[in-house]
Length: 126
Image (cartoon, rainbow, N blue to C red; front, side, top):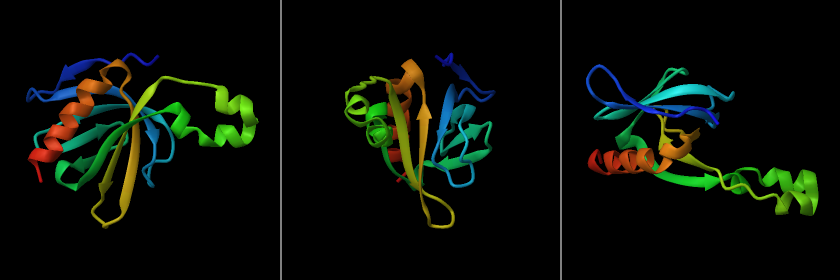
């Protein structure tokens, strides 16, 4: 798996290596990114966009089974029985154009730590 680790930026904000899986209308392709949790927003380095905590509507995790529902259509019953336990983080937010965006990240083993921080910061910035 992608080596996800926690570091800090120059101001001491937590920063995590992650895989951007997709979801944003401007950035359809998956790529490796760095996600920095600033006091007022999430900064995604590698695709150059930010998500203000105040714009976040929901933060949750999903497994590949929920993401890959198309697999059932393509592979039939075998696809439905193919179980994956890997979890991803979905961040749903309203962008500056008032459009709903849902972005998907793979934080690896740091998922619980990162998701809790994002959720708490979004609550504190409402």
